[in-house]
Every structure is written in structure tokens, then in C-alpha cells.
Amino acid sequence: MLIVGCGDVGTRTARLLLPRVRVLALVRSGGDAAALRGLGITPLAGDLDQAASLQRLAGLAPRVLHLAPPPRGGADDPRTRALLHALARRSAPQALVYGSTTGVYGDCAGALVRETRPIRPQTVRAQARAAAEGEVRAHGRRSGTRASILRIPGIYAPDRAGGARERLGKGTPVLAPEDDVYSSHIHADDLARACALALWRGRPQRVTHVADDSRLKMGEYFDRAADLYGLPRPPRVTRAAAREALSPLLLSFMSESRRIDNTRLKRELRLRLRHPRPDTGLLS
Image (cartoon, rainbow, N blue to C red):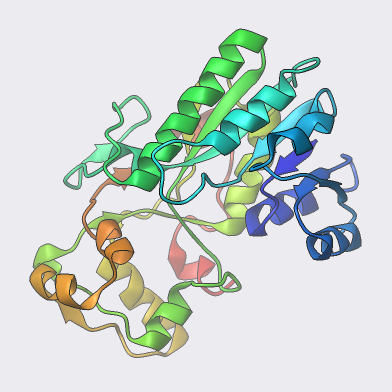
């Protein structure tokens, strides 16, 4: 199998499949290549921003896991387009799994969201993900590849950079209860298991949510994390005060509220969550 975007989640997925499956990974730098070799992953030099460097990917692996993000700042995803063009040059892969985001739904005012809900991406990064989803689905229809899309919420694990512990240590505020929003999460290890299963069990042209069972508001999530880590709970601020204190990126996360249904994850991919709630996952 080939992993495109072999960062934290891609590496966790590879560890699940090695040594039963030969795992290849697209890399841009020599340092990344050396680290992957140490894990038993075969690195392939290539850059999604340079289409000519991707030609060797054609016909190389029957299963492809695409986790690379779109470029910043645009509502399109030329990286996904370049990858799919390269894969189409020879025999198409049997399965292609694309890691998207639940952000494509936009603000749902706290509603329970199933995969059949129409998407309404409101941020530029979500619009780029929606564009990539369209490219992946079109590729599947043209080539006969079993193209599956995983829509992913906030990813967490104690050893991930930029996680709850780091944010709590900075004292970053969250919204007051009356302004707070629902946010969904998935432990990085459970996400890796979902990626591996989707390569074999994902249905053609099918979207699957990869989220845990919790339906917490954002402030509740960080309060629980603070209690588990023995740190002070984050300060609560009104939405008006948040506009003055927080970055536009953080504000965008606090402007969308939705609860994510994970029935398909359990029924179709047959994944049993090891961390159904952050209470255990934040510690392991």
C-alpha cells in the first residue's frame, strides 16, 4: 500500500499493517525518508506540489491512503488533483481512502450530523477539502477504484503536538457556557485503525465519519483534559471577548457547532473504538 501524507496518523496506520503489508510512503525530504526506513516503511521521493515528481506512483500499489492536506490559502486542492492524475497513468488502484474533515458541513447549530447531510463548507480550508472530496469521487467513478472518504473531526492523543495539554499550559481561553459549541474528537490510534479498515472494507463512493462516542461542548472537553492532567481549567470568555483575544483560526473552530454520528464507522467498517470517550484517550 502507498501512504501519501505519512505524518503522525499515517505512521500509526503503517505500524498496524507492517509487516503483513509492504508499506510505501511519499516523502519530500531525506530526513523524513531515514525516519520512515527505521520503521520498516519504504520511502518514495516526490512532492505533491511538483506533479512531474509523482509519475513513478502510477500502478505502484493496489491500495492508497491519502492524508496530505491541501495547500494553505486556497479553496481548491491542486495536490489531490496531481496525485489522482499520476495514479491514472497506469492501472488504477483497487482502493483509495481520502482523509477529509467534518468541517465541510460548516455550522450546524449543534445538530446531530449524519453522512447524508449536504455539505456547506464555510472556511477556505474546508472548501479545499470539499473540492478534494469531489476530485476523489470523480476519480473513483472514472477508474473503477473503490474510493472512500473519511470525514474526521479533532484528532487527539497525549503525544500529539498542539494537543490539549499544550493548549492548557498556554492558558488559552474557551467560550462561556452560553456561547459554547459542540465539537467532536477521535483518538489518533482509533483513526489509524479506521484508515486501515477502510482500505479493505470501505464502500465505493462512500463517506464515513471517524468520530468517538462523545458529544461534548468544547469547554467541557478542555475542562476534562485539565482535570485529568492536574492543570487549571481554561478561562471562560464571552464570544465578544474571544474575538479580541484569539486568532482567526481558533475563532473559526469556535464558530461551528455540530455533533457527529458514527453509526457507519461501527456498522460498515466494524471498528470497535478503544477510546470511545476522551476520558481514557487523553491519558493513553
